Image (cartoon, rainbow, N blue to C red; front, side):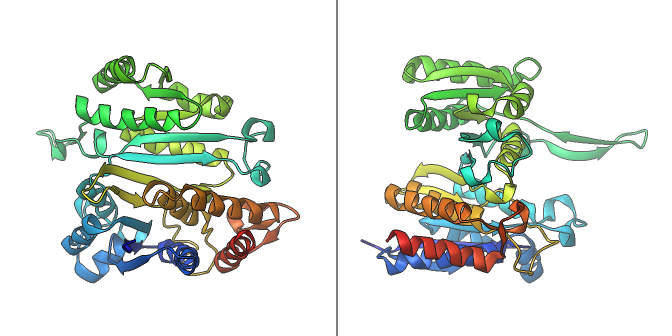
Length: 367
């Protein structure tokens, strides 16, 4: 087997810390026979500091050539005062676009040991297992025109354009249906067809795709604002929830809180398969850079580590190894280990390193 080429994008804030923790887990799998080589590149604020821009071209050449990209986080107040087009987050948007990763998979899984850590009642979240499929390359984040102009009367006018084409909707909805076939065989499609023409098109396209190719999968249409309410009212009614870029960003963060902490949730951003048979793939925790705790060894590494579990499953086809890692995390939580974001009375509070040590010990026990 050829070595898998992993590109590491540590980024900013706690990104380098959680990615370092993840690479300890990657190294464990390397000792067990996973062949890989790594390369590192700059993105976001770290890239601004080193090169003057958040998206150096060299990074994207490496990202496109990699078999999988593992990212930490980008952004922070240090760079918030820059012009919009030069901010750290623009680097993340470009890497998604240049890699062609249009389907963002965000699981919201409530580990049994954390059912009391959610702000909702335990009986509402116990056993929760939702997959949110977010379209990642269209909508208001990428639509043109995107501009701020000054009107004749001196007011400013800002425009973000929400734009979708049939093919953009089809490809992400196909991913959602395919994922549903591997899970509970049910898809909810969230849009705003009552007030947005992009929502009307979205609903028409997924309805037609369902009729033509996926009639065996249960399909429900839901307005995005109702989906937000239903996620806190009765989240277990959902299996796969597919939606556009903006709504997906909001709804997946809401779903994160159901699980106890945004620091628990991984993500995979996938595109079409390349000539070597592997998909374009970017793996990252969905939490931010948390600059208030950066460099203190307090960050929860679980979301980043579980993102690598998604890499094992979706890029390398190693489902059993992905399950092993997920069970190791579950075991550690059941033993009472907690970082600050998920701390509960009577549990053992640990930092980034100790949490990673515990996960590696659980992996050793499973080998």
